[in-house]
Image 1 (cartoon, rainbow, N blue to C red):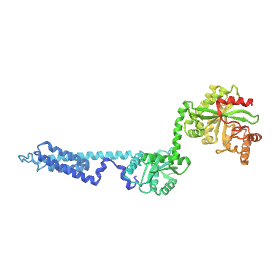
Image 2 (image 1 turned 180 degrees about the horizontal axis):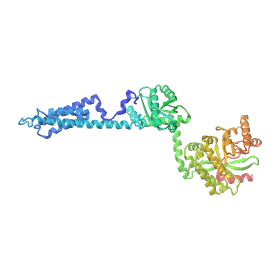
Image 3 (image 1 turned 90 degrees about the vertical axis):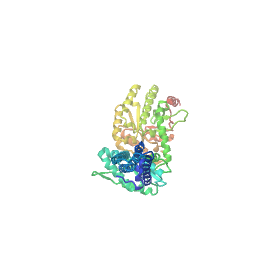
Image 4 (image 1 turned 120 degrees about the horizontal axis):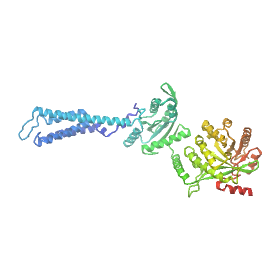
Length: 557
């Protein structure tokens, strides 16, 4: 089904032979063929008659006629050529001897055969090229216009100036496509995506272009004027469920836009930037988003930074720092939290917040987590001679909790370093636990069964749930610094902290307050039963290599 506008529909089949279909070209070609046939007749007569080889020049006119006018044109040219070299063309102009009728009729028949055959072959070739191009510009499964169609048609439209001076490239992604197909089967893809295509096309003002750019993605080109109304219409119609093979299907979409010429002048560039905007809308949970140069620049920097991580790990650019934890009952330093720092040569360092959140969304986090684990175990092996009871806390991300090989990797490290698992505590954020509770629970249960301790980090800032505290084998809650920073002045923070401490004590869990920046807050926490404190009031993070000296200095003091 072709729902493109009449203005742009012809762009679909632009090829070199399409120029021959233009009236002016056909008239010029007809005149050329007539002149060639007449010219060959004049040449044959001027060179002495039909007995000489110059009559073969007629084949050029026959082939051109077949090429430009097909089978009928080739046959008509053959008849015309046969008549020109026929009854009135002498065998020899000197003697005036005329041809026998059978000779010129046979020649005309042969001319018609050659001209008709040339026309037929060129028609077949043209149909094959047309079909091949049509197929190459259609989605294999749905038959809808595809990426090649859109990019060529848009490039042609830009060259011919058939679009408005300002237009939008709109990328529409079906976010739950895989979920739909995995649940209902691949046979639903064609009717579903065709129905989505038709609804989108019904909302776009003429002229427009629309294609199924990827399996789950459409790209439209439409004028910028009135685009807000059009996009509201697209969003509204796509929010309605689709009745596909008697099944009601809801389609969740994200839309991104880029404007010509503001955001680019080439089709590929505009589509890329509209796709960036679409991903931004998806990430933010918005219905649609327009391309933002600032956000794109930040994304490029992030991609570049992430691309440097594997080489940086291999080159030893990462360092472990640590931040001590104070046990409030006896004011002893009983543990440290291991923190990653990236220090490229000649740099002051790259802040963790710049790369860790982005790495957590990729498999690079596995590489970084394994590096932290190996380095932490190496340091603990060195420290335990002087600090045999020291406990080391290591952060695990939500993506780490989905790594089935992680428990065995940790087991191998503990065995190689002969470290008691009870000296290792893994900190997991609430969002990490709640991401996929079944997978998280299995991995955490495995670690717990092997003797490692588990802590919930940043407690209170995520989607706090008492259910997971009941179901998961955690040993420790770490109250987020958001509730500790203003603890001495904010009564609501005080109520929250005291409630969390009381709840943890009732569940048999230890409690650590993070972000303690005031010595008076240490006393307040100790008075209300908090087990540990961590923050600048105790110690700022420092390189792990300095821990033994730092502890010795505190003991001496």
